Amino acid sequence: NGSFEYILKDLSTSFYYPFYEAKTQRLYFVANFEEGYGGTDIYYVNTNNGQIMSSPVNLGPRINSPGNEIAPYIFNNSLYFSSDVFYGLGGMDIYKSNIMDVDKFSIPINLGRGINTTSDDFGFIIRNGASGDFEGYFSSNRQGGKGKDDIYGFKVSGEPGLKTLALTGKVSNPNTGEGIEKVAVLVLGKDGKPIKEVYSDEDGQYRFEIPWRDHIVLEIQKERYGTFKK
Image 1 (cartoon, one colour):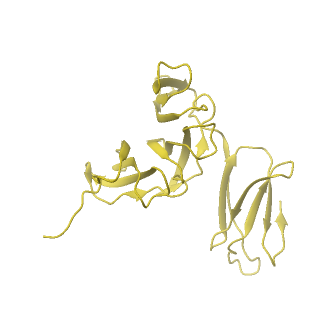
Image 2: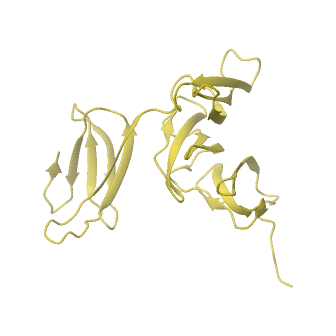
Image 3: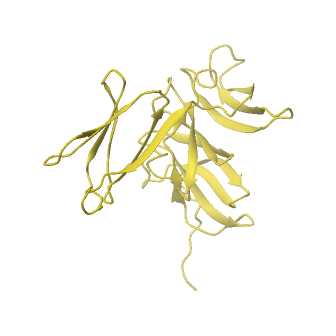
């Protein structure tokens, strides 16, 4: 005897876009659970030969936002999905996030024009092509289609995604080596204008990822401490 629940059967919740990754036996999906970050979020459940073995796990705030995230797809250790909140071109845009470790993702990067438009672009899938390139499909309601949501195909020489600059570091006491938390790390462009600002964690570690550029300046500062600039 005892109680049990149907994890993926809830009359108050909508479920969308299932994707099964055979390598990890995870079933990814989209749902609008109340405890999410807002709108629809991307989740997964662990399975054993397709039998659900865990409660839903939210992919976290690096992927999910107050808006809507949909259509998860994993290829070559990267997660592709669509969102209507990140710094997109308009509507739903398709993003790529590298899987850094178990449940750790890089900052999502917009796939750029061509794949994305000012309309809704989603449902992205990709595979290795016959001649060493990459090919795939996605859906879009962009102008010039046959109706509302149409399916488009593409072929590219390299995996789509903008080139990025990722940097990790640690702010520490030079005498003790201990990390210093809540230190502001400002990322400035060649013109001195701010691009991004992050803060060190409790161990003094920080990480950021931005669209590629050949010159940046780091300015690290905290009240009652000196300022480091490089």
